[in-house]
Length: 171
Image (tube, rainbow, N blue to C red; front, side, top):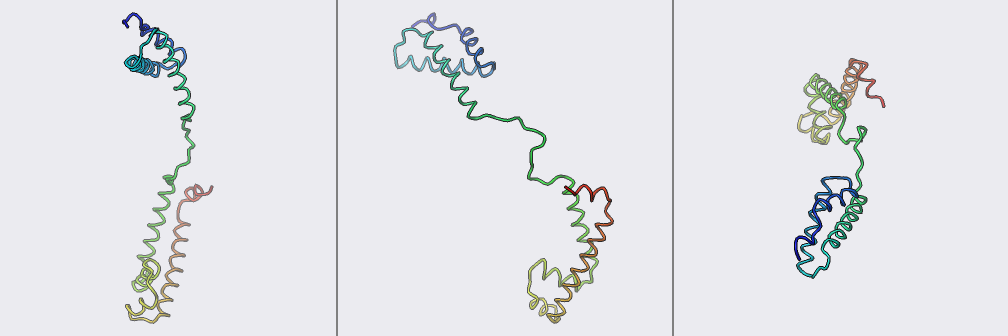
């Protein structure tokens, strides 16, 4: 076979480009066409290389469109749901954590100690009472009073927060 029996590269490119409409894809398909033609010619005798070349190109174009239909893509919009919290939510959470920490720091030391051990560390009232040398009833009262204190302080902090920030939380 001579080089004269091969189709001109430009005409093959135009043939593919008319069907695909994308210069990058067309260029890739031209390259793939020639690779497949030369691979086929190594195994078999080809009577009309130009005709086979255009047939290979036509099949590659068909395969390209089949693959693009299977892997269709959608343009991403601005309203995609995101798992991460919004910036405002993060700021509000940080403000609440800071208010909680201030309220916790303002508690009497023994009450804070009992509360932290019971509610944050999960220790039993019996263990806390034994460790701190108080009765279980006293330990329980400290927890109840700590919860009331935290509730009051968090409510106060919520009321002190700017009204616009609170309204942004509403759905």
